Image (tube, rainbow over all chains, first blue to last red):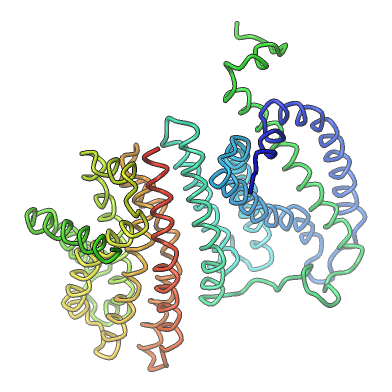
Length: 248
Length: 223
């Protein structure tokens, strides 16, 4: 198969322009979704009959936990594309994902810990999902450490891609082995195939918040990718022609 | 042809170990020293030691594997052998498999043998010792295979051994969970076949996939 057509759309100049066009739209969408989700979740959603007001941290915790996994898969998929088709753009995307994913994972851990204190009476328990999330954080930090150990940007991105693919094979194994090892977490509330065990007035703000986090991730990704494109192609003619602020 | 490659790499690794026996002993000494730390840290109460013994042996084996992997490709990287192999079109997946096998023979197997006196010294109950050895035998194969891929990925990088250990330990968690859970069950007189099957499954998965990851890693490091 001939994948040459991919290279045109994956050219850094096109990506840069596309990213610059999309950024303000995504930024607006993100802010609107956050405003809607936060107000309806923190003000209008009814208090939980058992957990009272403290359940509202769910509106940050669940989207962060979801994003921590979504970003890892995105990073590994971009890494796979970087390895197979040697696309510079995929290398850049994969590399930009790592710190973002690590931040979401960290946020999920911190909010989970804050939620756990009033609910379980302790900041930390060695519960299956918490522990998997902690391991995921270490996988992200490993990818970032590997990136940092290289001087050559492209080799760094490709090595990170191999590591994140090894991680993707391992994550289900880690998840199920940890699940088997111990569990205390409340069961899944949103992804059950029958009726979700959460009231619709609580569910809608949650879904809005997940969408907001998702948009926030793409917005941030676009900005990071654009910065890295400029670094990669800093000597290319099209970059020199851009009206960029120069170093004093 | 493929057997030749594996045999040649294996022969070379074993020969190198035979000619540099002091270095070949490092993983064993390290393993023994980590075991030695436990009575000092937790006291000599034999009931307590007997309870934590299997876990301690597992953790020590994990650390010994992680730290000994750093030197797996180091010499070949330093003297340019790896570069010749990669640019010369050598079958890299077979090379990776042979390297992992050599690591298991030189580090996994001796640690397995040393686990017997280590376990006895920590008062592992007799029924648990057999299960500990069986799970450690399977687990160490997975550790050598997965580890060789990460070792290839990090050979010659800044941060060397510590970076390698940091990348590899999260990947060893499933092996540790199944191994430790089997020994815990054995101590309670419960069946352990489930864990043994899971570990055997991980061995099959690692044999199938890890050599390809090693090959990809070598190609990236040498490009």
